[in-house]
Image (cartoon, rainbow, N blue to C red; front, side, top):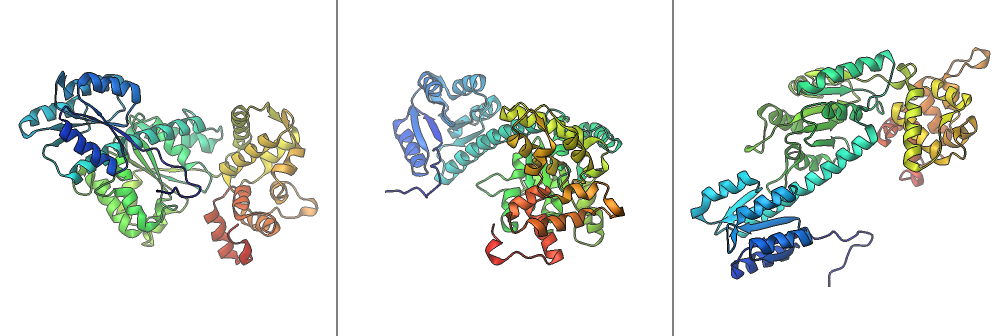
Length: 455
């Protein structure tokens, strides 16, 4: 008896409908699918197939061309009209290749010629279901990004931000590759999504890739795919591939990415139509000069270059963003938070925000969650911003004392709160990633005790 791994919910088996009036062939296909973990079901006619699709909502339909009351083309045409997201595979004989081509034109995702090999059949099924899954996930991602960022996610009235918005407005329809540079937390993905959303590719997929988060030995398959699975480049076909932390790509992958970008081909035969938007917190031009990043790839990716200013250089934008985030989280959490008192607003305006927009958003989210009244006040700061150096960093100090610089502030927060906060909490408090926190610890020689390392 099979056992489920503890803590892991069982995955729903994909439901596959086989439409064929040959009981022998249908039974063989059903058995083959069942052995691979699919839930296989059968229909013997066009009418039965359409009724079954309406009643059970399968994930994939495999139909023979010749059926007692019509053809597989009838199934395809009806499904395309009523369930355009449902993938279909046509099965045909050698003498019906013209009809198979017609099926592809009508909307079938693939066709198989009888007799076919088991591996060939299973590969076609796997490819069809992967494409369906990818489309669903991409639709969910785009809905999530739209909800999080809005139709036009770039908020700010400062001169620095107006320049960014104007550059995005000009670059979006150009379909040229873009390099976005900026400190951690400045909103590089927001800008990438704005470029995609305002481009002719807006209806296509937006596929983000965190180059720093993926294991390097697995990144090649993730990007370029395998013989049995599409990679992220194929999934981005017709849309945009967003390469976050592109500077972290291994040199071998840089070469392969350059080839895909120049030749518009993946794995020798799969043509792709993809716009590349890359992002980095590093000076990629300097890295290219030092030989740490391929110059030819850098030039290809930076046809248009957008540099995002840190929040501390966006005069007046912090309070504007804070109000936007407060409204967003109040609406999302069902709370009646409508503004800030003078002390809270002064803190927003004076704080240096080393973690940039991400730090600000995290703080406002916490404040809305913990708020008891309709106005966020100075008293709320004790709950959401316990790191007092944040206020002291930018506020005038008595006796002519020098305000803390950004890196000094980060170090003081780490030293003061590392015994009472986990690494995740410290990174969240500062508005930076755990990797950025680790790099600063290494640079300053600030080590946790071994028992705290994994916290």
